[in-house]
Length: 433
Image (cartoon, rainbow, N blue to C red; front, side, top):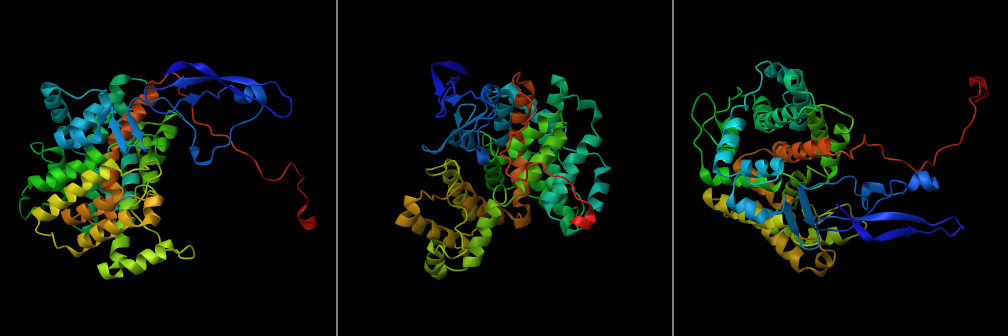
């Protein structure tokens, strides 16, 4: 960041002396006002519920322009990354700041593939869960438990330890997600294969059994790879901020990622694609769309339009366009073009894009609207959708965590509050209360 030539002057109506505050400029995006000395100078905090107007860190990883509908990883448009590379290429980029050359890509892929196995004792952790436990509950526990097995890489002040932990998390997350699925359906765990790509290996662990070999379908593998790329990072969202906040205390990376998974579990965050699919299933038929739309517009109704609109994007989510194309490719490959759920989704999308009520509110389809349909077509159960999201977002969390640890301005997170409770009062004896 660089200092701006202009300064912000905060004036007070009570006659207090004005306060001059620096303004910083980023590469792109809004400037920021440095308010760090505000409390010391005035005895006041700022009030910003949800951190809607607060920049909590410097970051060079991901940039979003919500008005343009633009998403950049290290400066590269998400459309180009999703169309021209695979997931591990985006992982390398997010971690290291540059796209790998051929030799670097080969070495990175090899390193990740050699860390995909988890300690054999991890299977005993799974046995402690009920078979019907939600996969996110299982992942919070098992990812956090990884710290119990890898004491050789927990020194967050050692760059080599941070690197090894990053690779381990990226490599082992698909194994744990697949194990959570296999455990839930009573099938044996499937070990990873080093000769398969990242996404192909995950599908192998998900869908193969000891009875028969899983046949890799390149179209389906590519679809999963695209899902992972599109969800790899998304700036300072709730779960990423959670990872950074946990990491600011010096917690180990496995604990930080477990915290991120717990946050992602929320239906307003990672559970949105599951909610969008549930909405489509509840509508049931194209014939029911008009009544559904009427209820959505009714202020007294509790019916909500899921999978449309975004807190940041005020234009068409660029990830949604790519996911829509992927949706067509997968359904065509599987012969599901006439899938009633997909037809329903297309009809709902058309109405929402043409209806003034939704257009005026900029409620465009987001990535969650389509990703649920694609995952359903791939054979992934609804309960595991958020687990796939966590698997994808792990690289973003790790990259953001590494950046935070290396930031000389980083301090332990400590939000302030506007206290509205009781003032000091005395405790009365119980018989006088």
